[in-house]
Length: 367
Ligand SMILES: Cc1cc2nc3c(=O)[nH]c(=O)nc-3n(C[C@H](O)[C@H](O)[C@H](O)COP(=O)(O)OP(=O)(O)OC[C@H]3O[C@@H](n4cnc5c(N)ncnc54)[C@H](O)[C@@H]3O)c2cc1C
Image (cartoon, rainbow, N blue to C red; front, side, top):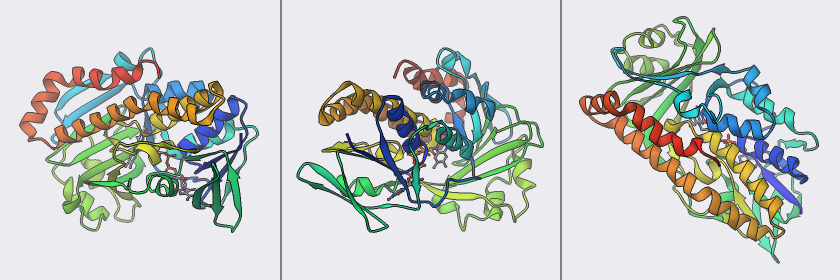
């Protein structure tokens, strides 16, 4: 079976690794000229760790990650309204970890034994010709594949060619992401909620802190550090002072949040994985976990079924419900975050643990 993976992000690399473990050979192309060596943090819940263990890379990731034992939600003044011990839900599944995003990519890449990523090459067209996928590349070459796996992110070209019309939907939130020194010794996932604004910090190590902040698009202005400081000027300890102290030359990554509306992600000789199939708001921190799980389930379906189309149907059947659940839960969380402070704080204070368990327990169970 001749297989092409498009994109060497978390989904593409994990899929290559999972297929290698099942004895498949794959080609993998990546538009960027090199793998990223810097960047933002990423938070992995227990189902992501379980998937990493199944891919044989959890040890390497664990060595460069910070364990997250608690997820704490505070008001903008710093009053704790919910504090969950992550192991109450994820204990039997896997550890919750935070690490620099590029180190996760490095670990996945280092795990591959035979597959080599072709960097600096993008896919420019995918066509169905006599039951085979004909793929056009940016270097002018054309090749044929039995299966094309689109792991090319939220703006997927593969999705565009195979599933035209499924375009990203804007979520009316914009965000800043940056890594700063962990002066205040923040030791847990810590979110502070204001009126339509969220400020989140996750330790990547004893000395480094990954900060995420968001607000409605209309209040994002030019996305400068000055705007970030103005939006969170009334936030108290422990995170408010970190934002207030930022040098305006600090580089923050900014983005407008988007999602890919639920829909079919398989077609003849074509399948989407990761964000290309089901990007959603980051409020469940499930992007990496879903990409890693896609990889494992797709490889298992292909190994079990001789027929590609049967394998893809099986993959879709196994993943659809989980994808829909994560998207629904993201919407519910985003709605609650946007509710009036008094209602939101009351709900989180009284039902925060139960809501956490309800949204994640299903994902902690088997794949
Ligand atoms: C603000 C924010 C915070 C987040 N925080 C978290 C978090 O804490 N935890 C978590 O689990 N998830 C988080 N996520 C989600 C997570 O980042 C994504 O789900 C995950 O990175 C998806 O990986 P991917 O491989 O599917 O896509 P991508 O990372 O987008 O990778 C796609 C790759 O395909 C390449 N490519 C694109 N087009 C082509 C082409 N035509 N030809 C060849 N190559 C191509 C790209 O260069 C890229 O390398 C967050 C998302 C956002 C927006």
